[in-house]
Length: 113
Image 1: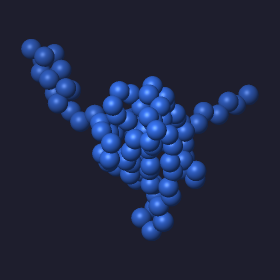
Image 2 (image 1 turned 180 degrees about the horizontal axis):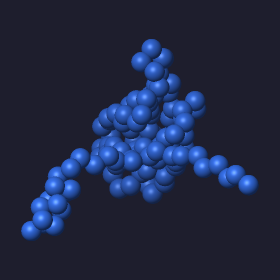
Image 3 (image 1 turned 180 degrees about the vertical axis):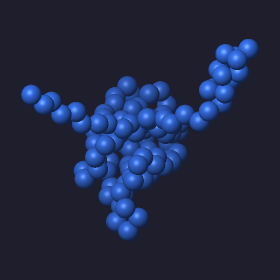
Image 4 (image 1 turned 90 degrees about the vertical axis):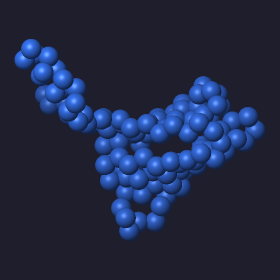
């Protein structure tokens, strides 16, 4: 009985996610990811059979947002970090009729000999 109560308590406990995903199911849908100190706002439009993804991001409240744009054909994905931002990578993926954007924390491992 104690084991069952412990499992129920663990299932109800808050869990910290190491990645967040934003799903944009149709053209002109948009949203914002908040990862550490970075806010990334994204939307997409159809252009020549591809999805043109436009994002604006900033890592400080007083900074001017930077813009990035990319085109993804069906099934394409790309993962990269943002200039000047450490500890997070972003994956943009075109699947079916929509686009998904995922942020994931990264770490740097040093090899010491």
